[in-house]
Amino acid sequence: MTAAPTLGDVVAVLEGLYPPATAEGWDSVGLIAGDPAAPVRKVLFAVDPVATVVDEALEWGADLVVTHHPLFLKGVHSVAATTFKGSVVHRLLTAGVGLYNAHTNADSAPRGVADALADAVGLVDRGPLVAHAEGAETGIGRVGRLAEPATLGEFARRVAAALPATAQGLRVAGDLDAPVSTAAVVGGSGDSLFDAVRSAAVDVYVTSDLRHHPASELRERALFERGTPYLVDTAHFASEWPWLRYAATDLAAGVTTLLAARGEDGTVTCKVSTRVTDPWTTTVTAP
Image 1: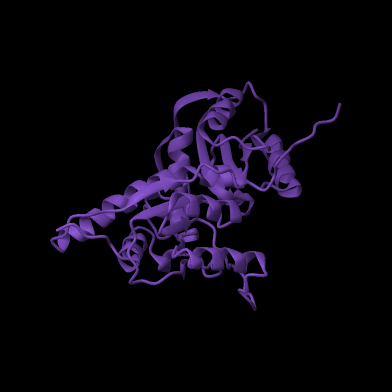
Image 2: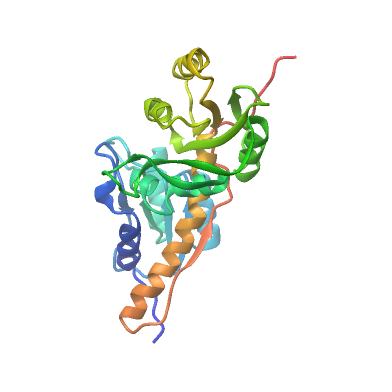
């Protein structure tokens, strides 16, 4: 018997893939808007719950939008349509579209944000940069060796080709001719993990949102000691986007399995948003 899964079914699969209990204590994850009893046939995946993603969802006829970033990470006092976040909620609910997010729980999960970024840059024989528990396969970031060793410049170009294009592009710190064969990666903001990266003794660290003082101190310390790690700084949006393809594939497979266990034949159609939601639109260089 062919059946459409409910939003509750889809949420159950998502929470199996990305258990909410593994999210950081400060984080906000889970169902933001929608009726668990409502049928879901089309799911749009995006990094950010912003207006252009709502536009895409409504144009495509989505029943659910799954984003990486939460709409309400901090408390709000109103979801009136006169506010920009309230407008997102009202537009989705008026069209019968739900909203769900998986954030730090998706960062650390198998085939989550960290694994997707690691695959994109060619990192193999890897494990968590910071494991959730001793010997665990889940945790923050990934560390391992490069399947194809390269110079820092070649590696940076490889990373740029693997990620969505943004106005920022990549920022690189280090000798572009230096050889690199090991790396650590963290999707999203990663300069709080510099101690773990140094302890891993890798040649290069790929992450986003690197601030001046932490990056400067890491490189000065590296130059004083052994020269590495070098830094490759990507746009925050770009480093997390590769996960969307994994999530779309895994959700469709999980829903099919869930329905089959009930003797039903069905799944969801998933689409990955290609809209660039990085907030920066232009870079200007000195003449």
